[in-house]
Image (tube, rainbow, N blue to C red):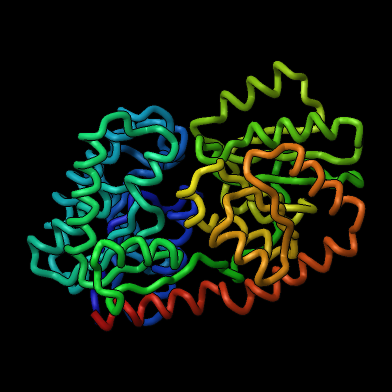
Length: 403
């Protein structure tokens, strides 16, 4: 039985895209007869507080559907502030390297990045233990943090670029989530035959709609546009609030922003200051509640700021909306994500940071519900055929095992 040692900064019960991807791949690999051990943090993202039932021990172990999960002591910090998050990332690297020596039998070392130092940890352990190292790239660091202004000095940027290059060339093989990321790494001189794109996708086994407890939002003939995910500097969500103000006279058009992140307080302050009544901001939801709000929505909003880097990004949330037959309004730079929408005719494109364009797209779909339904059905057909997690996880496993 092959044994994979997997470094991942995030893992359930955290509910972000990297936690979901890691978990959904790993459970399928276990079912295919692979022994998977994941070294991860104590769950605390994004608020910087431990999830109920967890303690910040030096090492704790659990078994999650056959996955061996080893959690390390964590520098707890919310997902805001450059310095504290950097300490959190670096501390995880040190802890995960130390704990990895307690995992005696390893055939393959796998690390997923970002965050950046998670990939560095995998590269170092692979080298020290003379094991095959596989690197997964879900976003381009340091490019993505440069795009939101988080790197202030050229010296820091140059150092991170050199670390990035070293990390790539330490890997026997690399998995990327988009072809643009793959081409970026090939441009460094990395051999094309050793790199493969395995896109994000959907776990169709986990789409059951369960009404949340308490007082969830209920639909009363409203046309609901929702954004579910990270409230980050990269997403420019104040554009959604501006659009809601432009549409205030349409009493049955309603906006939901659901999630958390560095920009949350800023968004709440704008909503309050401008007395926006047709938009609600809800906190990050447990994984089991997400399907309810996807199903509740009429249209899914996919938002990114105007920056050339984001041409390479495909937000994983768009596949979830497609799986629920919801049309997309995609307000991102022209690139991989917009090509998916064009190829499968599953949504409407809007220039990023364009509230008037977003308003026009919303009214276009609002006034033609049959077209909405057509776009939603097209999206479902595409995601069920090309973005099924069962198929993608098996492709990735085959690629890893052939190293």
